[in-house]
Length: 315
Image 1 (spheres, rainbow, N blue to C red):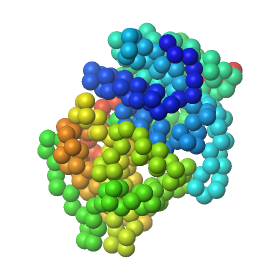
Image 2 (tube, rainbow, N blue to C red):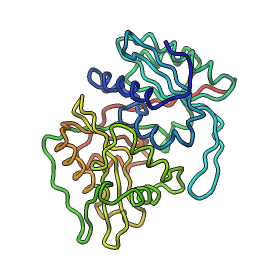
Image 3 (tube, helix red, strand yellow):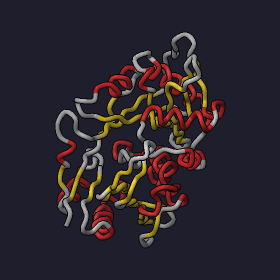
Image 4 (cartoon, rainbow, N blue to C red):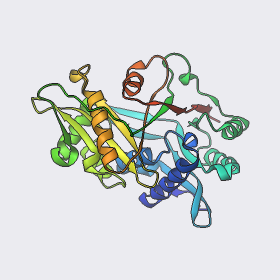
């Protein structure tokens, strides 16, 4: 067992290896923020900015990690519009292999120790009944913010790539890749969708350096005026022949034109050509957020699992 230290790129690769092993046997037990692609995206875009507030611990059986925890402690986040947000609570990303489910208690004890005295959150999978029981036994309950029509919980969706429609773009629009369009266009495309955002050129460089990022699997839709009107990154897990969309977004001025649908279909064709036979994508699952869910259902995705946001009050 390793002691608590700041998270490193080498740690992330070990964490991704566990995500791959869990995906191979129980994909419904992969926590939504601990998937192969999500780990790459979160580490790549955030470590230069927030890495000093990220602690981790790894548990091994021989040379293989069987459990890990990544605690994101309070910090200050500066966004693209110049505003600053103070994050005052802690959140945990974690994963435990189902053959070592008893390790969840050690993960919880570690998290409670490193985040003692502050509010703590975590989002295990709803399929992991044993883990949910253990979190409850340690004083974690359903986060009130996750309840109701606008609750903040995530649904993971999946589909096979055996039969795919052909994508259709409006006249004058075309598909590009980040390799073709370049870093500036890729960053601008992201900021146009999610502003205000903490994303920067430095964050994108971090993403580009994080395996398994591939610029030819980072897809954009270019409008006739040169604006990058939509974008998505695909993360290919070669071991499991699956790929993950994260993130997916369309510029506010170009919505309701069918760009998102066309981009997803085009991306799935590219993923299949790269060796994937299966695809996943996450979205907000609460009833008050039907748009993304409807988009994904419309191109063949169906629910696989959802997370359960838990919280433990300060103290």
